Image (cartoon, rainbow, N blue to C red; front, side):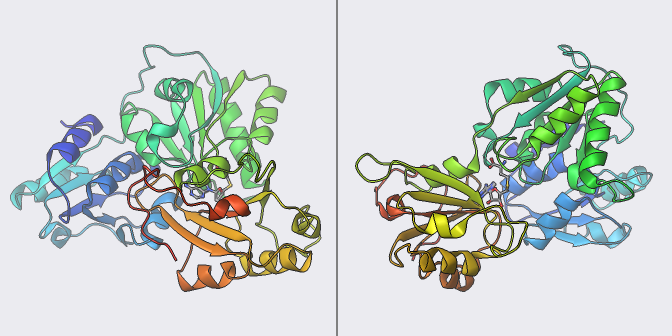
Length: 373
Ligand code: SAH
């Protein structure tokens, strides 16, 4: 029977671009296949009554189609390739696929648990996976990921990294944890601790750097307080990498000697917001805003009101370090309007400051930054 390794070979050797591929099953474990398939340009349909949040997000972003129901015979019509990863229907799906001459891979959800050959022992590693490209994780991060028994993954972490995991490694979508008496964060902390106490090596894989707006410290503290060995592997943060991948530096000799990284996720005037936007408006350096899409109109307005020049160059990098990367150049005054016009959606990094106006030809080594105004 074929396992995930074979899927990887298929997707690199078979040309699936523009071809219908059907994935049956919506649990986080199919993320390892989906990430790979997305890279092939296949037309992906997921059939599952329920899916994990990461798959839901992919469907919402138009990267795949999701049919929220059980499988049907005609799901296989016109398909070139199918992956069956359900709880109980895999045999029937594989049989139907065989009859319809559709290649079908069954991925055992009930795999036998065998420890990795280089098992590091029980504990937790909090790993920064970098901004989006699977190549931008650190060597240490990649090595520890390979040794994991369980991986708790964030939506922003490059999911392609999951394709290399041994089939028996359990993948959990961190956004999936049900809300109940405790908060999702507390449940997540508990899960890390419980698994490690059960002898597992647990990897908590986060986008960018775990300590930049990532709640990493809360998780590390929870582990440490529970006496669970925990290690942190820093990552390449989107705050600095996204501008670089868009072709601009965040500092420049003689131009800018400061970078301020802020979160724009709260309404600026809200009491809970700890960002002093009027103080930021008086600065001349580079301002990098993460999680800023929703409130961009209000934040840019506050910056200008506090004195920042309306003509200050601004730049948005959406989906940095992925195939979907888009770069939009603007000014502080026009930023909010331009974001609306070009339908900028998270995740995006804003860069406001003189370096955002620099133009360096032929440096960007990213695939198709397809938007510029
Ligand atoms: N720890 C992460 C940040 C988490 S907060 C890091 O160090 O990168 C989430 C925010 O990060 C997003 O709202 C967005 O502003 C930014 N972000 C993360 N990945 C991104 C990407 N690939 N492209 C653009 N912005 C990204």
